[in-house]
Image 1 (tube, rainbow, N blue to C red):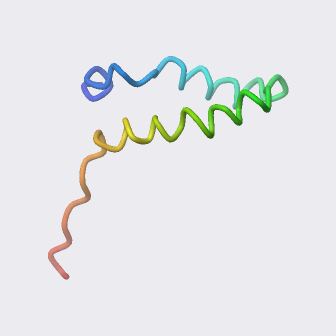
Image 2 (cartoon, rainbow, N blue to C red; image 1 turned 90 degrees about the vertical axis):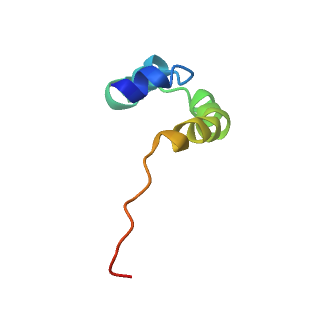
Length: 62
């Protein structure tokens, strides 16, 4: 929860709402809107989320 609070620039409510539409109201999807989300919003969202992902632990067997 702390990371979510720290990342206030990420539109969490919108992401959850979009997931609900995809899961429960897929018959009401607007293909143009989905294309815009995929091509415009997701690349920016990835840039904002990547710093929140902790690094993988180093494998000492290498």
